[in-house]
Image 1 (cartoon, rainbow, N blue to C red):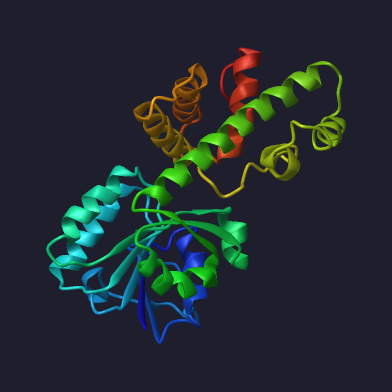
Image 2: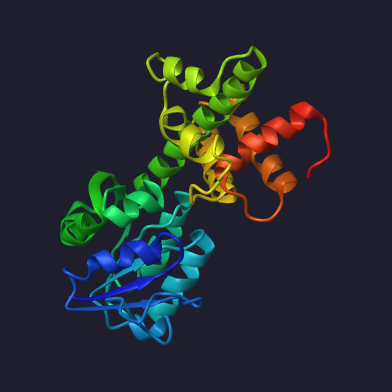
Length: 286
């Protein structure tokens, strides 16, 4: 099958090459192309140039970009199965359905979890919403990038990704808060981790992120804080729409937005720890 991949940033540039074994032809587009010359992904001159593909994947920052891309592909006459792997609001699925209603084409929402490390090894969790038959058609391609799971109708994948990152962000913030407090009591970070990871408080942050990205002061996990804040904002919205809002819900979304603004630029999400310590110290930002 002729395969297209649009959006070759930190994640897409690692995910797309893994499709080479499934594709008879693999082409990609990104305005900031940086794949090596020997990549199995061959550059297309434009989004419209991918219109003749049988299946097209998108991995871009948000739903507004996804909609514009699909409008461009439709104007170019595409008949491809469209698979969006971006993190979007579930409402995006309705917008896409309206765009595709005239042509009868199909789209899957298939956002991922696992970051660059698992993208590189093909171990992403791929949470997919849409028609079951379309999922079966796309499954071999998705399986080349990770573990695809069909979890419900259109929009379900987007919702699941936002909810996952909401839970992840809550664990991140509270774990960093607890670590900083433990240090004030003279508890060594290594002891904090040893105890909490053998107890009920363990989570992805305590097991993976504290050692690698915080204690080393590397802060380079590869997942931007502004993207986490976006996903948590989406989760806050859909939680409220369904009547499950708690005080934590809005507070977490607001805290992440504030941290993005105060840290400035495009900080890694693990830099929340630096933000937390700065707030507690009362000192000016370095």
